[in-house]
Length: 252
Image (cartoon, rainbow, N blue to C red):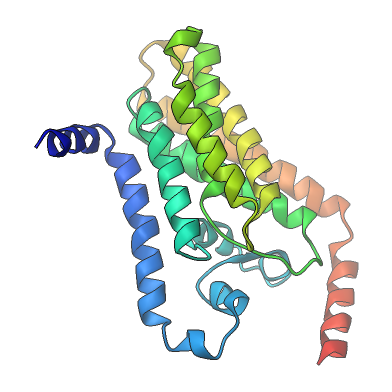
């Protein structure tokens, strides 16, 4: 009974984290159930791409930008899923109870999306298929570190054990196939930057309005989009695109 009561308390204090976990588990179960027959004549990579995994060529050349989002909920196998869930559960509730819910969601999604996008630029032409929520989860970890820096949390108050557990789990994931380590690094950096900006505003405003925080998030997204467009314009993607098509037809 004591364990049940503890779980009830944790569940009530981590509603957003629980929703994110259920979405990841639900997507995994549905993809395996509905795609069970296709697994017999498709490779693992083909199956993952079918269900929304990220691939630089498909995302950038064929404008399938939705893969930046869907790949955050696609997992290579049960081990990948379980390790991600444990990593998120170890740090998510700690951060969630300290900040507004919509800020927590924004940090999670921004870290995952931006991590996937940056990794696509680095992995272009390497035909890498990547998936998983690790980039977003590491963004949550660095967000917790940013929170501690901004609000000058004492070292004793830092959930060191939870952070180490989450880091060990996500580091271990980097050894599995279809795991994008570049997305991990990019997610960590982007999560820290956006969190530092958010928490600085929270500290200065004491009780900021949701409108103000939404405007800040919009501004950060616009800045990120401008950065991506500049990189895109400075890179000869049209030339690379035609080279890719040439290689593709040669392989056929």
